Length: 101
Image 1 (tube, rainbow, N blue to C red):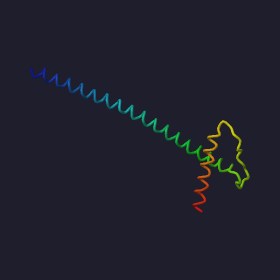
Image 2: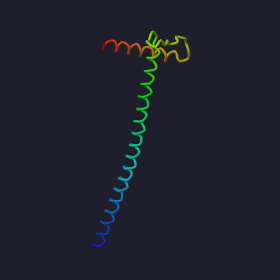
Image 3: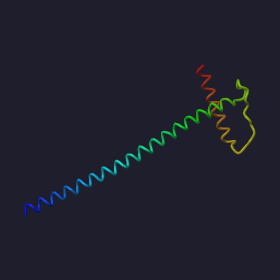
Image 4: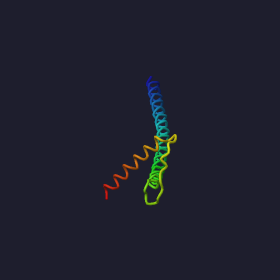
């Protein structure tokens, strides 16, 4: 009788350990996937920061009466709203720059 009880306990422990091992492996896979997603998002943020910085530099280079002489075309186009928002951002940047001086 003791032998049967011991076998039942051993099988139960073996099953429990297998479940824990399976759960650990699943968590490892999920962690790896999360780390990969995090890395992809970090790269995207880095690219966006770089492109945003380049865009800001480009916008500053096209400010009317800028030292380089470039002028923004005030014509209405399909991106008029975007252009207006960009101009407002430039004005805010100019105001901040003048406050720092």
